[in-house]
Length: 196
Image (cartoon, rainbow, N blue to C red; front, side, top):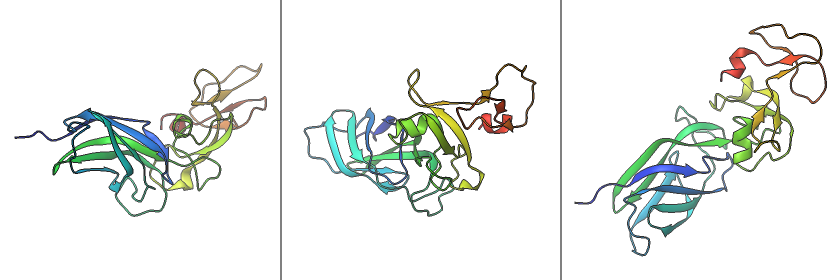
């Protein structure tokens, strides 16, 4: 008897919420690349396009636009955090339950990204600057907030959480000032937003 496919990782692990990015799925029991086998691949329930099997243990595909929230509710091009990736080979299916996320580009509150690294990974925010993020990934962007993302230093994907000049920093769990700029002055994200 055959064993079901086992998905071990997905690279990159974040793509634009509107889809279109190419991902590589790694695992085993995918069948031999040269064999003609019935194969399908879904990300968060949506079928991938342009499916290829370039090597044993590897699939590539073009990600479709996201159509489901984290709760499984229908949406149109929304953020979703840690969604399932499933591979089917010869009627056997294997799933990585939390292998993939969808992120907006951070240009507006409605298109908020998941976090700075996620926007960089998905190819949507390669420049340093102010972006909207919604790190809970629940597709409700009403609680999104602006941050300064450092995308060109030390590999990028950094979120500024604290900024102060010469005045001593006073410990606080609350937000104060603004860190969503390159301006000088005091600013700090709230601990609740830092911990998301």
